[in-house]
Length: 260
Ligand SMILES: NC(=O)c1ccc[n+]([C@@H]2O[C@H](COP(=O)([O-])OP(=O)(O)OC[C@H]3O[C@@H](n4cnc5c(N)ncnc54)[C@H](OP(=O)(O)O)[C@@H]3O)[C@@H](O)[C@H]2O)c1
Image (cartoon, rainbow, N blue to C red; front, side, top):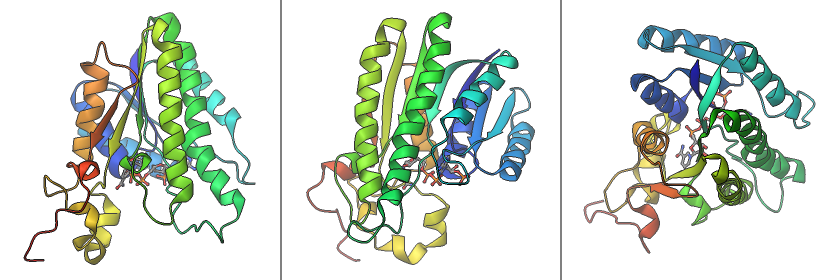
């Protein structure tokens, strides 16, 4: 049976992506790190979308000792093979946010953990997915990147480096996998209204990133719509970057209302 795979989909944007794909009639495998949270999310999705198959999988980019975990990605794909799950769309949404790190003080291990999750782990997912898409005649791989790959923000060196690297990975895979009819693209959100936004209304009320030409930030559903475009309608598009940030990136200065 054909499925889409979405990583990091027990909270926030990943949930919006799973819900969009399921609403469009796709069966979905999703991941989270915590088995109990994955089970709860799986039950919610199944109740909400009874006409499609939804399967959750608990997986972390790192082992408990902090070392990178390539084997668990391989095991996960082998487990999907055993269930005869064929993946024709993969959405690499999970990310290590690299918060509370500073360039001068933070240990190198923290920088590497962010790069491992946002670049190396996605490399492993894309490789395992591509191996299976090739005999199926093709597929779609979409990275959820960030407009911070273009314009930097303070004290996020590891995250921003990882998102820049991820764009290089995306382009490289688009080139190498095109001959197999595997399309590889990226959605670049600006600020998304996640639970962090809801929990910190004072911070976000005056955050310059919300003063976009369109006057708002993205909802998870806006990101999900862009993902759906790449999966469903972009037959001749690969190596592309679709920015979903209300026009934030094209500004020299934030578009702050005069009455603020
Ligand atoms: N939020 C924004 O404003 C914003 C802006 C631009 C781009 N983005 C990008 O959009 C995507 C979604 O953002 P979001 O804010 O919705 O993400 P989020 O709330 O931080 O959730 C990220 C997901 O990634 C998983 N994850 C984190 N570290 C992991 C690790 N080491 N191994 C495996 N999974 C891991 C988390 O798992 P758990 O559920 O177990 O914690 C979670 O499900 C990300 O790629 C992010 O970089 C977000």
